[in-house]
Amino acid sequence: MRARSTAKADGLDTSRALQRVLYRSAKQQPQRRFHALFDKVARGDILFRAWDEVRANRGAPGADGVTIEQVEASGVATFLQDLAAALRAGTYRPAPLRRVHIPKPGQPGRTRPLSIPCVRDRVAMTAAKLVLEPIFEADFLPASYGFRPRRSAHQALEAVRVEVNRGAEWVLDADVRDCFGQIDHDAVLGQVARRVSDRRMLKLLRAWLRVGVLEDGAITDTMSGTPQGSPISPLLCNVALHVLDAEWARTSGSLGVLVRYADDLLVLCRSRVCAEQARRRVAEILAGLGLHLHPDKTRIVCLTRGQQGVDFLGFHLRKVESWRFRGRYYLQRWPSDRAMAAVRAKIREATDRRFVGYPVDWVVVRLNRVLRGWGGYFRHGNSARKFAQIDSYVHQRLAIFASVKHGLHGRNWQRRFTWAWLKALGVHRLSGRVRGGAAHALR
Image (cartoon, rainbow, N blue to C red; front, side):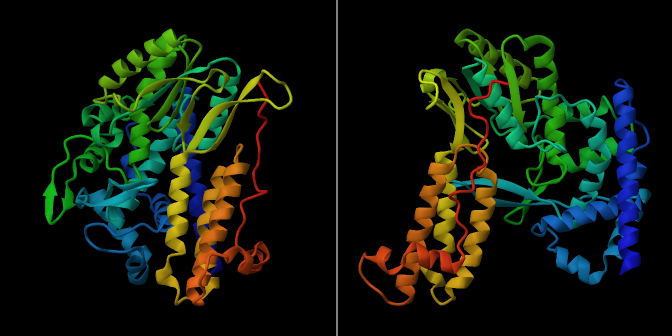
């Protein structure tokens, strides 16, 4: 066991050393095109690290039906050796993607499509991402926050807060229509080719982009877009939208500050005129990638003195009057209505009466998993009031669940099932866990 752990650590060290070398080379030589990358994808340390990432995500099986557990049972070493041999021999071919439709959070009845690669393809895609990511990270600009190492949604939200508090109170809330499904393949690969001249690597990426989708027993060809659900897609999305970041910085920075998290983006401007010009400019740049702004969901919002608010990355952002300095307004954030509806739906599901045959402790374990995940994200900001609402809703749902379980009737559940009862169950409370930011800071 110790030898296996040591080998794993050594593999992690060598893969990260490779990434550091690639990053430094790309940073020091902005015009360099890398010509020997494909062989790195088939390296044992890279594939083993890719396998660890795929296993940690515990995703669903692809079109071939092979699960993570089945690969582990049959032998991970053999699985990776076979994949490496196929890559080196040029016989590797991706399998069709399995199409599933999952509910949109907070939007009952609406779904979004996911295209799930098989486990073998997910490992190969992750290996390619590990090799390509440091090269493009050397080029990516500070305006981009999504799906990047050491960058987060909260950093993007903080950048918005600081800029708005400095006076950029006109916001272009841009909604890119079906970004993952509509990106032009040639445009994406053209951007990759700026940095990668390895023809086998480009051929591999093209194969993943053009692999068909299996749905209802039929395979449909994909002529545009990058599969939403594959490990390589976020990187390719960032590579494509880097065109927007770079062009904005070069020609349009005077209009406002761009903040982008994958395909969610805001432009923070100081006047309505600049915001209108920003909308036209963003639309022009995106058109070159085969993308378009959604005419009904793209809007210009005025945040002055809390007149309007904007939803971004699950939070509702709105200016609120300071309790300390009357007449001054500062941007604050709390969970959006959609985020609140989504967590309530999960709480309802976890406490559904069909689970009355299970112990209450079992229900609490499932419920706490939801509350910790949701609360861990939204605890940054000004969420105290929303957290208190969710705590009350959890109390109500568990009391109703216990009433049904024990055959109790009447609406006096608050006297039967008090806060002390809830605490004794070990229910995770959100109240008191908010990590507030410096709401008045202008830095």
